[in-house]
Image 1 (tube, rainbow, N blue to C red):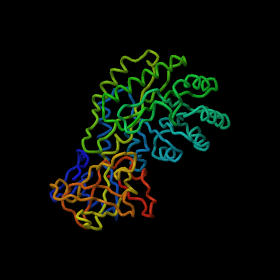
Image 2: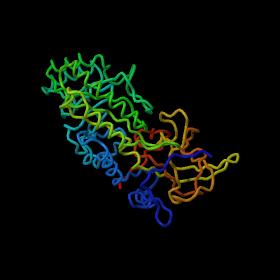
Image 3: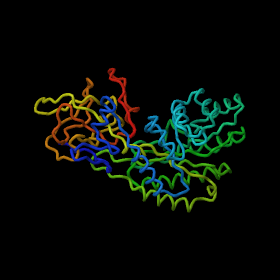
Image 4: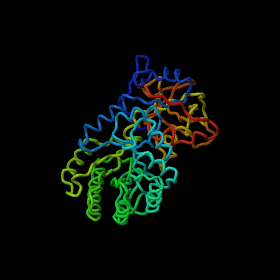
Length: 409
């Protein structure tokens, strides 16, 4: 038997043992959707998460949603009323952000390899472009001149440090992201000389960290780097995007990051910041920390079988919707996501089973020899921490299975 990750708090069952999501029964939601597999996002949990962040962080720090975590349109519409800005990473995400009602003044566009038409769309709309290279700066300035629009340009900095313990390191050393810190002052000088509207720095060192101390150390280093660059440039950056880094507990042994400790340390660092940043604004950019726990993935058991003494629950879902839960999205050693039987939620485990999907590949495994209550054909299996990097981070076209349905409650 292999353990699974911790089920997020905030979920409960009714008197029948059926999982409740946003106060509604999981089976009723599946029926309303017409079919499984189904992602369900709890709007109240989204609002509670944002409120938790605001209580923990200094009031002067803005909250930006990194919408690559989950770009589902109804969820974006909800988040647009909760956060201070959206960070996007493609022209498609830019269009979705604008459609959500978020003002272009509060949208920033990062990501390497922006095409000219994407730069043009951002400049025309009035969004801020986080420049990833000198070449991208040249193209943005030329497009702005052609359009007769002053482009809003920030510089994404590749820092000379990374976020210790992060699941994905975005800074330090050779990276496709951002401009090496040593080259930033000269590039900002060119932007100012060209008459661009310089919006500041985007400094993102890593993501999916659970160690509050490591996050705090990285934020302190980020402020020191921003101050050093400001001194070399001779200008105060209007905004310093500190990146994110706050992760969520997916696997056995993981514990939630202490947001209060992160906020306390950040408040101290801001209070002691260099005078060159006295008039700067600050933002944190978070994706999964805001939305992961609010989402669940419901999939129905279509077959129960035994092979060489091992029991398999075969579901109508799989890695084509939940690539990360299958262990094929950046993890080296496969471990079990939080998993349960939705119609026996909270019941004691009675057997060890492997939960597999419907795809014809041995990679399609949602639960590996995990202890669960007895489940049979037609029962619902639920994967938690499914609100981030689920539907759009998975190969839904694989084997022609198609996308899962999504619902905000």
